[in-house]
Every structure is written in C-alpha cells, then in structure tokens.
Image (cartoon, rainbow, N blue to C red; front, side):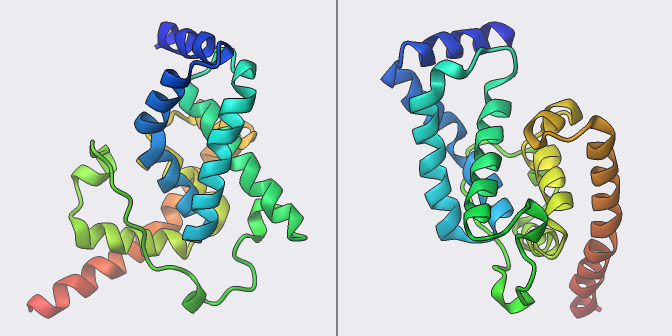
Length: 197
C-alpha cells in the first residue's frame, strides 16, 4: 500500500493525466457516496465532487504519499464542504441540517458501486434504503464517522486524519453514532416484519 501511495504521489507531481483518470474511475463511487451523505443534497454533492477533482489536479503535488490516497481525497472533500457551508454563513459541519425539516431531507441515495463493501454485503436493497434514511436523520458528525468507517472501510486513525479530530473524539462519535442508529434500525426491522405477520 505504501508503494502504491508513493507511486500516486509521484504521478500527481508529474500531473500525469492518465493517472488522474484512473484515480477518478477508482474512487468516483466512494467519493460521491461520501459527499451525498455529508451534504444531504445531490446537486451540492455533485458540484463538490467536481471541485474535489479540480483540487487534486491543481494541488496534486502537495500529496506526499505518507497517508493513503483516499484519506487525502476525503480530507479535501470534507474541507470543501465546510468551506461551502461557511460561505453560506454557517460556521461548522454541525449546522448542515439545522433548520431543515425532515421533509426537506432526501430519504436515500443510490450510488452505483462495482464492489460491495462489507456493510452492503449483509443488507438487501430495502435495508439499504432504511439505513440511508436512518443515517440522514442523525447528527452530521456521527453520520460522517459511520459512513467513513462502514461504507469507506477507513480505520479510526484515517477517520481522525480526515476529520481532523483526535482519535478519542472519533471513537466517541462512532460509539454514539452506533448507539443512535441502533434503535432506528430496530424500528425499521420491526416495521418490515409486521406486514408478514
């Protein structure tokens, strides 16, 4: 993995267009899914998606290969979302959904992905919709950590790097996020079983 990261860093320093195209193909689904959950708005997520790749193109020489490329990529994405929200007079990621009613929030996102994550292997399409809806009802900080951990399969240390939060904070957010989503998923499971009885 380290050699691959160094090779990517060298290619980005050379502004290798082929490498950039390969990276876009490799990470497009994961990045868009992360942005959809972070933004809660498809249009904003797609605009940010384009901006992230522009930043990679322009500032790729700053990537040194010490961390995994996806960690660096998701950090850029997160920072862009925060910057966009600040421009709209919001001061933090916590305020992403403040003032929005549940009707304004999208219920689920469908992002194509060629290889299923462990999170996706154990749930069917209906369950994914319920999980997406439950995630969207959660506080943004908890939702972000859950998505990075279970959808993106990042380690807790990598999540700490992306979110620029101490490892203890990441662990706390993960624990609280899991505790918050568990009753929502249990209610959804029971609701699914009721029509069968």
